[in-house]
Length: 223
Ligand SMILES: CC(C)(COP(=O)(O)OP(=O)(O)OC[C@H]1O[C@@H](n2cnc3c(N)ncnc32)[C@H](O)[C@@H]1OP(=O)(O)O)[C@@H](O)C(=O)NCCC(=O)NCCS
Image 1: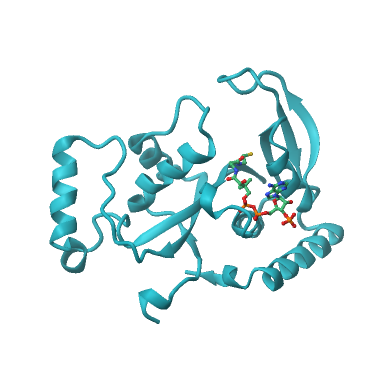
Image 2: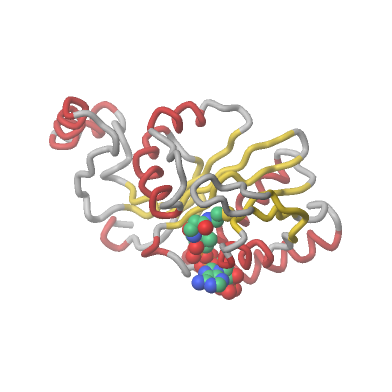
């Protein structure tokens, strides 16, 4: 399939070269959060054996040059030269910036037998196309494969959009963390699934997965 015809979305594990675009998505998804992750903190996070991150992307037909956020003038010049000379073709990808347009990212931490969703975000222009839900489905499946018994997360009490997504997948509010967010002192709800392997949860989860696949045909490519 040529790049021009390829309008599909794909999902795969996050790679180091994704980090600059992941930081862009993070800024868009959590504009008030402080501190924001940096290139280095995310690189470090990628080496964390408890952490598992995924991205949703589409093949980039724009092929624009995007300087990595937080880069120095020197590293920007090197990236630009690599880009101009299509370094990737000869030496492997310097970054994925010009090849993939990342549109969403999500991650979990495995805490013994509990998977904790640490982040999930979709670029503003790509929301309401089933991508957030697709990532949630994938990370619940991943959590099951990694041996998690439940999935938990924290969500701002004001974030009703995300709460509705989680509720759809059987998350309920099981507690509150007072003044959890340092930017505005907002409380967080702790939301959690029931036992992932219970018959009730599996029946609901499989039904939701099926309905999602039927509704969003573009969401079925996993690399
Ligand atoms: C939350 C977020 C990831 C959802 O991603 P998305 O791709 O837009 O969501 P989807 O299109 O997959 O929608 C799935 C479900 O989410 C809920 N949802 C999505 N947009 C919604 C909206 N505007 N209002 C209410 N519910 C909404 C619905 O339950 C929806 O299911 P439905 O279509 O059957 O009603 C996205 O809004 C986002 O990145 N927000 C900013 C970051 C964030 O808040 N992350 C969560 C931190 S805890």
